[in-house]
Image 1 (tube, rainbow, N blue to C red):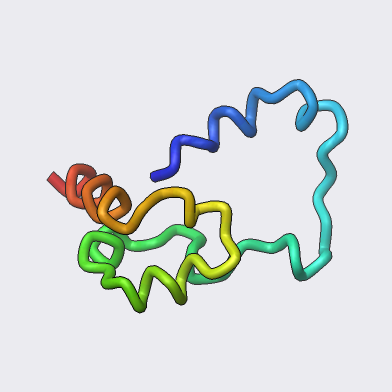
Image 2 (cartoon, helix red, strand yellow):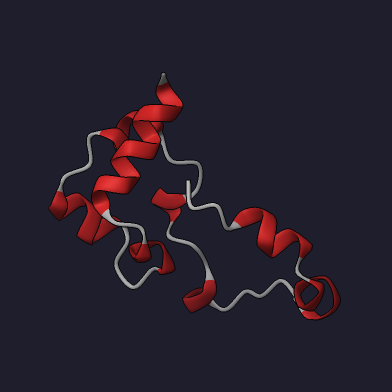
Length: 74
């Protein structure tokens, strides 16, 4: 959805120094792990604001999230 996963996987810094953490503030929001494309395709502004609060995914505008989800459903 965001195009960031491959960058994170191949980043030399992440490969050498990244460590799993149990710090709650660094954990993903549960509703954003394996989201249903149908939900994202129909997301409204209030849902977007709630689902992506304080998330780096906010850099992807709502219309782009819906567009990408709809394209993936086709």
